[in-house]
Image (cartoon, rainbow, N blue to C red; front, side, top):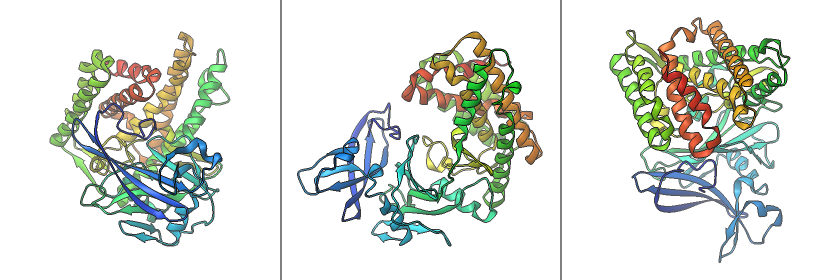
Length: 443
């Protein structure tokens, strides 16, 4: 588990490990293992690990072999990569299967393909997904918490709006709250309509940056791969989904006292980040000044349900336009916080940060020079503005006209990124540090 990208306990000292196995099928034997990991610094995480067991060793599955047991079936494999067992998930959804603690919920009118193997999505990070043909995708939430997962909750609520920028929910798998260490039932997986022939926003944006770097003396708007028109349309799609979220789920506003709580949370996250990333220390005072600007705002701030972890990797481009995925929120935040109300500016700031990442990630991969640094800044600035223009075209308000909000949320996101990079991709750490240096020095 510690070698997996979805393992959220990196950097924490483990004190105890316990497991519970829930049987999904007998032949072949597929078990859903709940792994309870306790930490020296207090707290417990519950990770979801599906395993398949076979009587005979299958050499074609050697790359996903977990180990060998003394009892039969003895050969244990990663069930998410065992194509002989992946059709089981669809069968259980189609049957609305219920077994002890588990409940497979199916949306009214949902059509589920049968006898179809699923293929793992190799780019997954905090979760794992299986794609079935060109119609269906299953997302397994690797970390179990009590309460309905926001991804399921939001997609279910948006069903009535028929928003073309959100893929329909087909069903979800829940587990009784006791197994999730809480009173509420937890969410193990969700089933959703798959979008074939779609390109993710990150890949498209990076291709645009490469096109720009390949041209010696052209500006972003002069290059064939200019991305600004797509950024504009993505801003429109984001505003459309925000409007529908406000229409079907709770809304409110933060007064000065509540904004003080938001600022305190940002400072607390910075304190924790400084323990992990000492390189943040020179910027700490400047960042706290950015957070303080948020608490000094005179008018209440509108809040609603938001995406919570918005970036170019969470959007897909099809021939019909942009589709927004993964309304789970930042996996590192507690579930209750991810289901709470927040400013839409958090999502906007997340996407603005993602444009910075797309522009600069090649610079940390060995392509850095002063000229490319200038071109990266130019690309990021052009696409950030295009995104805000598109958002304003639908929402009627330009988010860039709220600079204190944008700066504070961008700084908070960049602090989160610094911790993530330090733990997972240390060579990418200069990307958030570069942005934090700029934010900290703003007057």
